[in-house]
Length: 207
Image 1 (cartoon, rainbow, N blue to C red):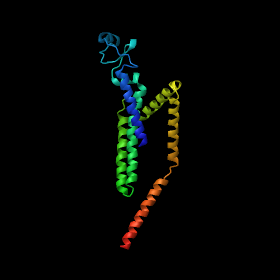
Image 2: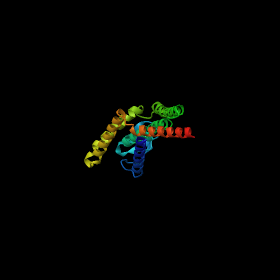
Image 3: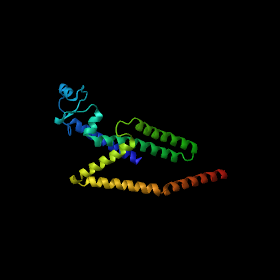
Image 4: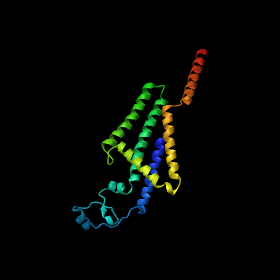
């Protein structure tokens, strides 16, 4: 659940920054397009609506324009959005399994229903990929772009280094938690539930 919230929050932040840069024409040189000159250059009808600088580069779609100018932001938003939804579905499935643990069949049904949604989203994402050839390739590309982004900005301040360190710590503690989980809190809660049930049974017998 924490992972889902973090990913979706970062997605909203990055998308907002890109919209601001587009609205203020930052990082992009938008100039009028002369369709006749472009037709002579490309030999075909120009249906694009963005052109950059003196290169006369015309983008035939918004996705091509974003990848050319905002690939890090584009890959980050796509990867974090899908990953956030998957994390939320899986976390909710585990929560349902635990919350309804006393009703085995219902808890398994709820968990399987949510996991079906997660695997269905993954199947659809891989079958209808727009770029990068599927979720795993998108993940690899986003990690590569993130590393390049952090390395290219480490001279401007310590925050990029702090971000990399915190990301590594998050991953390390997550692996430790998976390999050696501590369920003392849940075991204590179950023990308290059992004691409460035993007390209720004793009161019934006394009556």
